[in-house]
Length: 372
Image (tube, rainbow, N blue to C red; front, side):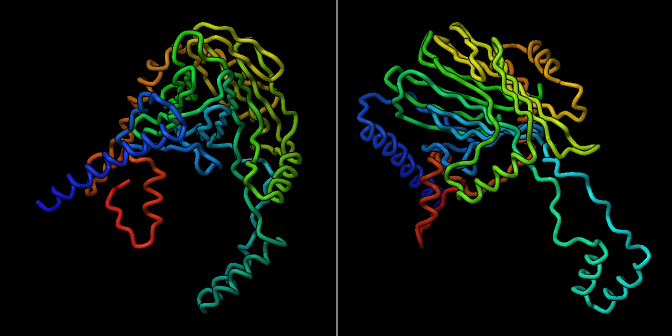
């Protein structure tokens, strides 16, 4: 009975917090109308602020291709990765032949001289220092800049764990815009949809670029990263075609068995409007909505491009976001819902912005009964 009463009390508190947050946003922006709120996923979270660094991005993926959505309404960056994209750093070194002296190593271990045993094994390798394996690195960024009215209010973003869909929504003086993205387990690529408040309202520019470090990173780290990038990545080529952007780069320290190049494509389909290629950028004007297919391939034989194969595979797919999502959710939802962890649940707790939850946890001595 006490637990039930506490649940009801906290539900009322949460309802008030939601109402206050919406009112505060309205007063802060000077808006007299509030856009329809973004549907809140029961399994997932909502946020009221875009990411300032990649650590705060919305993460989604299908096990092979990953996407990190920084959720910036007017100047979006989506960082793409591939599960096997490890930067080649030269030919691998064969492990030392320690077999002839294995009895010495075992004798040290038997005597409990573990530190000496470790040093003995290291000395046999003739290494001067610890050697790192090929590092895991991003593929590229998808950049999307929204044209037209630059006002932003009623901003919300969310990740739905049950579907893998990330959503960014905001309102300006024209109306409400939204971008949704998921990485399909069925079709093996990422799909982004951009919608606006009515016919002909979506205007934007997009391109693919090498991953750029945030300006929040220390300048020395940026310089070190830039030096490493220049010494390992070459032949970067980004090209805008009538309805697609292609990306390719080579790896200068590739070795037999490693990847030698990376290829990616962003295929664009619009409902209405026009698409204009210019250099590495596609400009979209007057569209009702935009659908973008993003795929990545790792190239082990630099003489054999997979660009046409990717584009042909995309051409065979349906050009409807909901249809594509349905096929993905049938697989992803089954995987996600196989396991469930039940904790004390308070109604509406999942509807609180993640920033509010984190701030409540940061207050020393505070009691925070709401599960994430």
